[in-house]
Length: 344
Image (tube, rainbow, N blue to C red; front, side):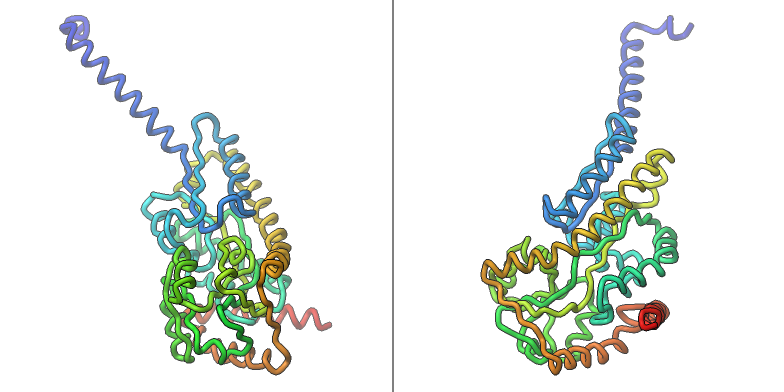
């Protein structure tokens, strides 16, 4: 009755206020149907395309109004910055390498920060799968859900001048991840010169001489044109670049079970596609760069021994700093078990 007794202008004001409240609620619901995913991967690359495939599965399962935005090319900052953005809700997910993943869970560094440990992809796959359940539980406890595991090839050294021995690189300036001070300290202690930068700074830095050598996968070197300024590549499998697509636990739990199932299936497929095709693209990228002037240098037995000796010096320094001691020992045990089984 009080409504009927209200002046017309008050009725209109109340109706307008109610309308605004309803509209605001609908906007909030629409916002809740948005997922923003960041990555350093180049636009239109294999990795970007797989993220878009996951996006389509999510949008279809989520329904009308759902927005899944992928930000490639490091437009959301470096990997450490993207991890920070996920924590404060500016991003709901990211496709990260170990460099960014270790900002969430340090033990993940074991898959990428132990140089010359893995001899082939079979060893990488074996160790990752052995560690996967416990690792994903650690990420969940930190507030993140791992949707897919992938990799991007082996790290090789691209330099302005030819180099094949470890000592050859001591006169050069290395690109180093700005978020890895432990790695930089280890490099300095062994006589190397790291220059901490973000990935987006690599090309201008090597063009201006700020750095002379870039540890990079062949695919990344091709996509970013690094090889034009650093036309010498040392063909050793220094370390695998391992990565994962993660989303915040909040974003995951906001999805219905049906949407989670669709996203999980799409992510599993994307991870398998990334691992298979990325490994093929390593050699394809090298061949493409060779046609454009890249010189590939291979080590002989004596030079390779020098590299393995360097790795042996690095392991005690990495254990307990870059890689937690317990995880370091676990990886070593898995490798020993795998190789013992292969030798039978």
